Length: 298
Ligand code: 13P
Ligand code: SF4
Image (cartoon, rainbow, N blue to C red; front, side):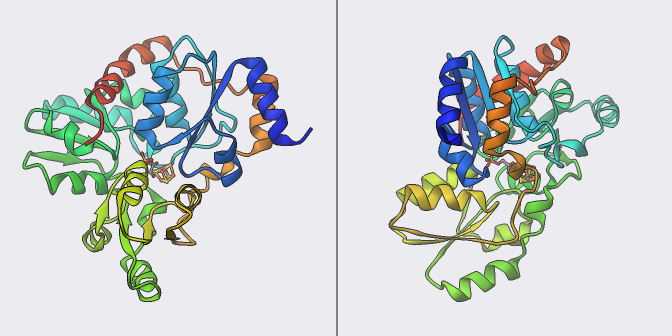
């Protein structure tokens, strides 16, 4: 039996569903029941009637699946697949800031469960503008400063920005995009809002990973430069074989790539590593997460 057949068999035996983020390795995307962005995955996790969720993504995404589904078993095949941006919030400092400023906290979903437990509402790159617009004037926005700056372009509210960032998107430069544009002058430039403001300035379309998939599907254009993690190009090329997608070869999120087919098999066999979160933290983190899901996409 090959690895794919093994996964299919184990999935059936465990009544499991595999959710995978758009940045996952091609072979992992190929065995997934659902592939999407952070918002789509959180929504899918909240709807599933499977008993077990195998989450192929980074830690905060697997935690979100557990928070919306506390009674289900959520397996994260590689516990070391952690988002460095989520680790950039110090909860003691955040609590202090919240008390001093007396402002609500909007937490990007790329945060730990402990951080979400302090937040008033969460957002993803697919609904950050909508979420901030729904809040009173004066908020603390954590942790992605670039996403915060992007939101500020559309909202005239006081926003205190945390100084977090994504190392993968921070490493994408305007020069990288210009080089691609020279090679493919007719290509439309799409960028993720985690990119720096100068990259956002040269983009034709700024969207979450799923937003980019939707935009490319609906567009009459045939070529796209994709300023985000390289994994998204696999999904787009597979789903739109008549179009060309140019990703940047250095735009790799190393932790996203830690999940492998072998890891998925092992976790379904051993039912480990399981995502475990303190009940009190789940109770507190659930509210901002469900508020975000309720608001939907921008
Ligand atoms: P999306 O929610 O757009 O998929 O982004 C998640 C992420 O981690 C981007 O780096
Ligand atoms: Fe985190 Fe960046 Fe990787 Fe997304 S691409 S999971 S923000 S490190």
